[in-house]
Image 1 (cartoon, rainbow, N blue to C red):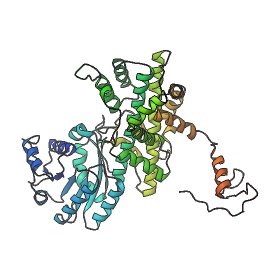
Image 2: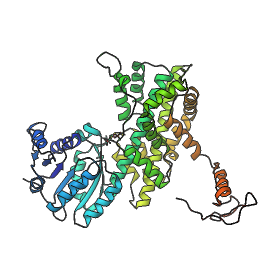
Image 3: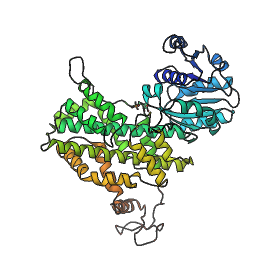
Image 4: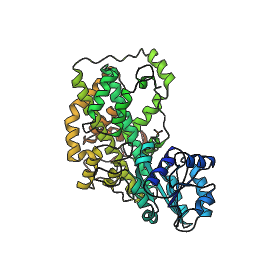
Length: 482
Ligand code: 6PG
């Protein structure tokens, strides 16, 4: 019996996906560029399973049923192109190559188009959930050549995470790089969630001087609220984790955050598409700022910076932080879905936003209770422009505002950096203000550059220039928006 699917790349994600596929009765052929790793895998984690190894790319292809399906679990970038170039001469028309790495979606657009000319169907799929997700049920976000979906659907939906009602956290996202785009936004939201939680932890620790035991108990309590999510769960675990000397391990970890790039790509795409993705982009900058450790140590001394502890009823402040965290999280997801909508329209992907929320309901790093509410919001109103306008979310935002403002104001007052919680609040203040001071910007642009402006008392589309100084000319600049 030939293999149902081949997987190239036996790092953490590749090995665990293969074992997951085997658990679900699929015959998998495993290959790795360092061939010795294949034997190690077959004799090790794969021992006693139906998984077979391949000692070359030709051997891999020969052992697969038609139409062949070869999944790449390799580092994003030119490594993917390297394997594609090696595979294409060995494949037949109608065969399928799947990229399960965190590839940048323009690369996937290019690969789908390029391989289509050779009769090969290319799928770019997000796979989320880390090691545990890959092994027992990831969220899978496939996109690319639609002809491939009927041939990969069975495997992907079998191995994916499932919702409480048994729905697979995997569905066809859309054509071209749509799957990798949605995974990229997932990672951007992940950055935002992680930054928000770190700011809440910082406020509880530095502002309220709470112990790790107290903070751990708080995050445990938050599990039974709308904040219930994987990242809240692991944060509770992290706060309770002791080093060998019995002290909290988290306080021994260097405060400089790494990043492999997906959050950055999300911010770049938002700027390209003109979407105010303020929270997620602030979370990327927060990671950049954290990497300036030496400069921060120097500046703290230079500015004699201290954070004064907060007075008052700690329980009231803890509840205020919970509300600020939840409200900010809603803004982050609302901004993320604004970006997904804009990209869907820009690329003609016709994305199903409720389906995206369903795929994120389980298995992925941002899996959380309120993704079910997001799915409901889009089912109730597929055309909703801003998730915060959905009655369920609007009520939470309105009810949370007093506490949210209180936490943001206190953070600013005592010098506690909370870039995402404050930017989310000021975004909402901007989004709910019908008259912003952009008229002053238009006046300034016209004053120094004759860039013209529209008037509130004239029809839209009519542009005006004023000779503000009386000495300028009457020639105006062309009008365009990037
Ligand atoms: C996932 C994760 C994963 C990502 C890690 C590291 O969905 O399972 O998002 O794909 O690679 O989170 O990402 P950063 O190094 O960018 O934090």
